[in-house]
Amino acid sequence: MSGPLDGQGGTSGTMPPVVTQSNLTPQEFRAAFRAAHLGMAVVGRDGLVRTANDALGVLLGTDPARLQDSPAAEFTGLRDDTRTWLKYREVLLGRRDRLHCTRRLRQSGGRGLWAEVTVTQLPESHDALLSVADVSDRRELRARLRHVRMHDPVTGLPNRSLFFERLAGALAAATALPGGTGRIGLCYLDLDGFKAVNDTLGHGAGDRLLTAVAGRLTACAAPGGHLVARLGGDEFALLVEESAGTQQLIDLAVTVQTALQRPFETAGQQLSVSASIGVVERPAAGTHATELMQAADTTLYWAKADGKARWTLFDPERNAHRMTRQALSRTLRPAVERGEFALQYQPLVGLADGVVRGVEALVRWCHPQLGTLGPNRFIGLAEETGAIVPLGRWVLTTACRQARHWQLERPDGPPLVVSVNVAVRQVWDSDLVADVAAALAGTGLPPHLLQLELTESAVMGTAGRPLQQLRELSDMGVAIAIDDFGTGYSNLAYLSRLPVSALKLDGTFVHGRNPADEAIVEALVQLAHRLGLTVTAECVESAEQAERLGRMGCDTGQGWFYSRPVPAERISALLGA
Image: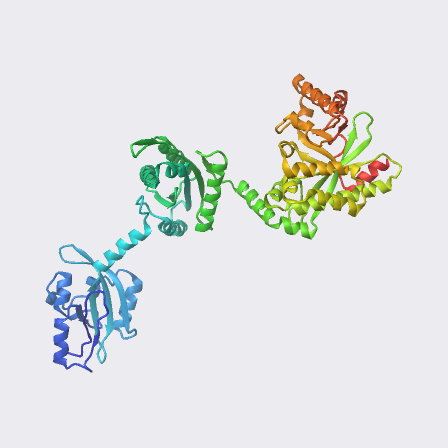
């Protein structure tokens, strides 16, 4: 071997120290090269091996002399990809100092090994030093550790980390693979009632049940080669790469539910479980893993909310409504502070004489982006978030102010009562008596011109502080009405115990034409009158309905037959006429 050699020594998996002529004589250097445990060879600019040491021969399972004049790139796999090959050529030509990569090598006899291949320019020479270190054991250890890290210890299924890794890869592959469907699907499922198994039989039984469920899911997914993963708790996911369409995902969800309906034998007991499944299928292009999982999670929630033990397909319109609902929920309280709400009023008309006896104040949200929203779009949200308390105070004060204005406009006219809806949380979460007293004092409206409407379900069963508040309001002179009467508890015994002055019959009774409906209305009207209560029929839409309700004894009617909810100035014009 002629020319300077830059030898490397050391054990597999470590970077050996550099040996140069600056610290060794040529004879010592050659001896170190031949005795090194690290497989090495000197490679010329033409890529042919000039000489190889015994360690390299042992590593490759061949006589090192047979490697001489052979292309080093052939037995090291450096030709396997263009990028590595170009870097290797740059080292041989002296344009690059070093190349380091990992390659799968084949020994004579067919056994494979993983090796770290390093090519380094030799100083003061046109040759390069090739070193090959067997890292198979280290790689196998890493693989075992990765398997432990990426798999669920209970079921042996891929865990959340591996699932998201595979999902990201599937999304990338689906958009790049020519001739593929370019679509992806996901069944995201949750076991119904699994917590009861853990609570009653213990976590050991729960783990055995999860393992059995995992086995059935794997069997369901096997024909299509789909990935099954346990994402945590009793949540599993089945990933369908290159989906053939929505029907494929629906069929898979049905197969899963059918498989899980069979009882499980666990700890000597038969256990029955069901699953709620969210199904999402869409084009992979433009889809992010997080977005797909959010859609799946939302759809699983729908399946649970719709009654469990079922699959539900993702619905963009339903999701858009949910997103809008969330956005409204976040902005509701600030909207009250910004004054984005307005009131409209609907007349309550005497059925006997056609005179306007009062108006019901109905709130609207003048949303800057979505336009005018009716109460059905936000009142429920306001009650959930607690924004109903400040909103209710605003409605109460605004309605009282307007009613006082009408009273001053018509000093000699018949009294006009303004009716304001009160939510359950206003009764429980705020001092309703103080709020009403402040509104009346601030606007100058007499208490007898204010009526508060509470739903039947809110009033029936009222006791303690809420009942005390209603009594104080009644003592103050404020009228209390039960709204939508006949649709809630209908416990008539409470009517004699509550400070109620009016009933508002639900529209279902108004529209009913069978004799039973008419008999119920007549009986309710007679009962109310005997208790000293007035009766308003809601949702009156025709003259025939108004005439029939008046004949049955209803005092006032409210509905589109008389007027839709209108701004305050329209009511003023109506009263003036």
